[in-house]
Image 1 (spheres, helix red, strand yellow):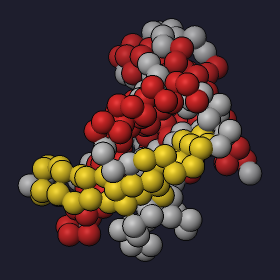
Image 2 (tube, protein in one colour):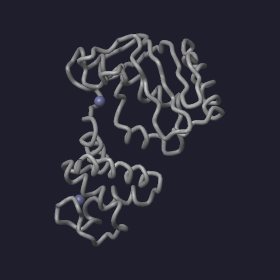
Image 3 (cartoon, protein in one colour):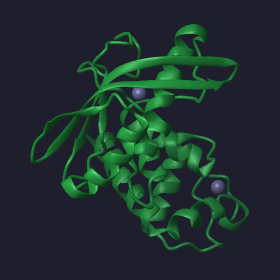
Length: 219
Ligand SMILES: [Zn+2]
Ligand SMILES: [Zn+2]
């Protein structure tokens, strides 16, 4: 997330304070790699997880790419749908992570909001065959599902149309809502849309996501 060596160093101090076992394992010009185990202690949905997980965290430098986590300790079964073949964890959709950090990426917060809950969600799924915090598909479908939730739309098709509206039109309350309800925007998804159109940070994420979706739909 456009980390420089300097900006990352500041954040790493906080991370190492909280996660005592993590340390820098590799430090190159375009990537910093952390290695170590992180303790996860979460009580939610009637389930208490208290366990440590050995991971590597890769943080790209001077790049818009999000940091990612490798399951070094092989704690997660490879048959699980949210781990990729190379051992990289599918923490959440990029959209949800980027939307969480509109004011700037925070590595410590990311560990607490996405990495720790990932393991909780996994262990919960192993026991109860359901996801405590929901889950989303990969690729284009996952992006559309994320916007379906953000817009509170009835389908991913409606979510796609709402995304397009945000990119192609300026908001007008009397426009017919693109979701297909036949109602005017102000009486339908107007508030949800304005929330995006009025915030350039959200709109920028949405525009990039729409490009990804359309590329995948066409390709
Ligand atoms: Zn996934
Ligand atoms: Zn609508």
